[in-house]
Length: 193
Ligand code: M6P
Ligand code: ZN
Image 1 (spheres, rainbow, N blue to C red):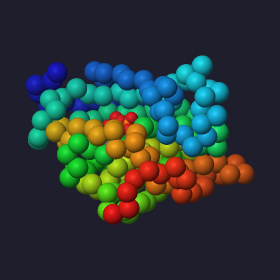
Image 2 (tube, rainbow, N blue to C red):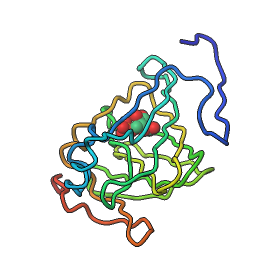
Image 3 (cartoon, helix red, strand yellow):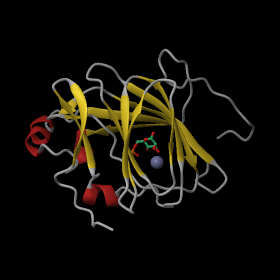
Image 4 (cartoon, protein in one colour):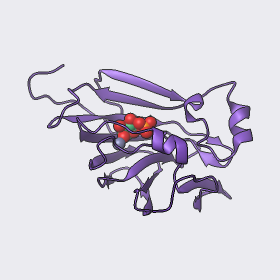
C-alpha cells in the first residue's frame, strides 16, 4: 500500500486502470433471486457467465480514507434484464459515493429507505453522485459493449448487500423492443415506509 500521495492512469480508450491491488469477478451465481425471469436465470446458470469485474486500489477501510477503483460490466441479458451489479446500501447508511462513467452506456438504479427511487442514465464523461442513504445498482444497457466507470467512496462505508438480496430494488431496467425501459419490480419485497 502506498504511503505517499500517488497518481494512476485511467486511459479513456480502455477505461481500465494501469495499476490495481484487487480484482474481483462476479458471476451470475452470486445474483440468485435478483433477476425477475427465474427461468432465464436457471437456463444460464450452468455457464455461470462473469457479469462484471471490479479493480480496486487498496486503502485502509477507515474514516478519512477513500476507496476507489473501476468497475467493468460486460454486455448481456438474463431474460429481458441487462447484466448489472448486485447493488447495495452502505453499512454506514449516511455515506455518499461518486461515479465517473468512462465507456459504454449505462443506467444507475437508486432508492432510499424512505421510498424514493430514481433511475439515471450514465454516459461517458458524466459524473453521478449517489446521495447518502441511497442504495445503488449499475446496469449495462448496451448489449454489445462493456460499461466502464470509476468510483470513490469513504473508507469506513462498508457494504450492506443483505437488504437488496432480500427485497430487491423497486425498479428494474429491461429491454423492450431494443431499448431500455424502467418498470416496477413485480417481486419487490420491501416494506412501504
Ligand atoms: C461500484 C462501487 C463498488 C462496488 C461495485 C460493484 O463500482 O460501488 O464499491 O463494489 O460497484 O457493485 P456491488 O458491490 O454492488 O457488487
Ligand atoms: Zn456503494
